[in-house]
Image 1 (cartoon, rainbow over the protein chains, first blue to last red):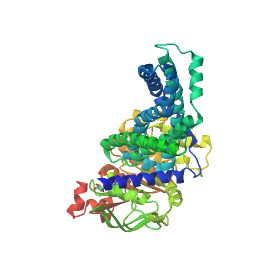
Image 2: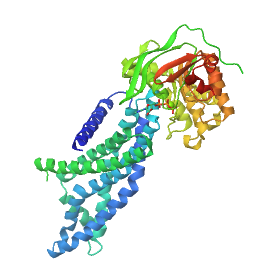
Image 3: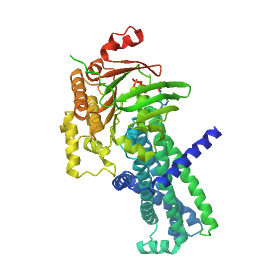
Image 4: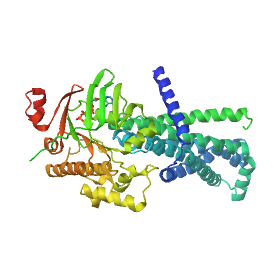
Length: 251
Length: 251
Ligand SMILES: Nc1ncnc2c1ncn2[C@@H]1O[C@H](COP(=O)(O)OP(=O)(O)OP(=O)(O)O)[C@@H](O)[C@H]1O
Ligand SMILES: [Mg+2]
């Protein structure tokens, strides 16, 4: 069992290593890259927006009673903005994308694998790794940060509405407070880590798809493991990110 | 109905020596020797699971043999690097048993795929003309903008055949070209294979169970039994063979 995990980790590392070799080879598949970017954005945008909005709103509403005990409800925008920007919006976005995009890539490449479409590309003189994997991984690495930034904005808007359900905070005051609170050290690490989230979601989805075993069951399994492993890695990266920012004194 | 005449043997385009391939303990190809001569259509006959598909995948370089050499147009396939392999594959058409049409692409994009190689310089009009010619050859010009999922099984087979033939390869490897077709279409496809052979002097390996197709296209038949080249000869020779292992295929 433990041995299998190590073997799997080794294989994923090798698959990832290949990405860095292939990405620098000429003939970038730009059209396929754009298609994937559009697809990713299009597919997860509504879900990301709705979830981020609700998270912002709910977090604010639930934090208010606690702050009220200390008579500190004026701190509400400060507090929620830090938790939303630093943690909740990026991680929720990544998890949604792991579920939607990661499983989609795993299933798509998995079914291409079992129906020999990947072999057919090879025979047709197009490097399937470059055409399928490099484009998808680049697309997730670019699009998930964009979606996360959008989620930041939407969740803060949810927070603003949450503040105004019981009590009044003007639009200007709310944003002034947030921008006074948030510093470079809050925003930058939270954006940087989403690039890593995007990368692992793409690479794990592709890895699972490429190594799909024969049959429909194999495809389902690929999609499933893509979600499980990439969600787990999102949390692990999150954990590492907090340690690193700590060391760099950005907390 | 007359059968295809044997070819006077001269230059060999594929030459296989002492080929071995096993999956675990299961020896699929065992000490296999074989020559394909220019302009010749050879049919490979064998039971289901006898390793016919594995054999042609070894030839195109999708699988690596455990032992032995496969010389295709003078190059030993297992020793080629990826760009040499690609150069060789332009001259070889490969029809997958499962068709392996790209199901996220239209029929047109499927056929254009082998022309994507960056070192093939063709203008847009030429590409279009090639696509239409290939589709007309298989009798399906009206499907050009359809998706593979909208086609019937037999139509998919014919589109896959068109994709195989679009680069006018010197050597064609057909994996069950007429399986799943009605007898009339099957006969048309067999006739098309024969026409291509005559017109471009192509050499082909054809895997088929369809005795009618075999009768039309074969110059020579090779029996793949127990991983070796068990018997070889013309249709008549093998049909009149006394060996029960050979005879059973013709009953
Ligand atoms: N990737 C693989 N891994 C393990 N075993 C394999 C693999 N591919 C083929 N085999 C085995 O090799 C044997 C030959 O398979 P192959 O697909 O060549 O049969 P075939 O002669 O084409 O049969 P059919 O007429 O049914 O297509 C089978 O027993 C199969 O189990
Ligand atoms: Mg087969």
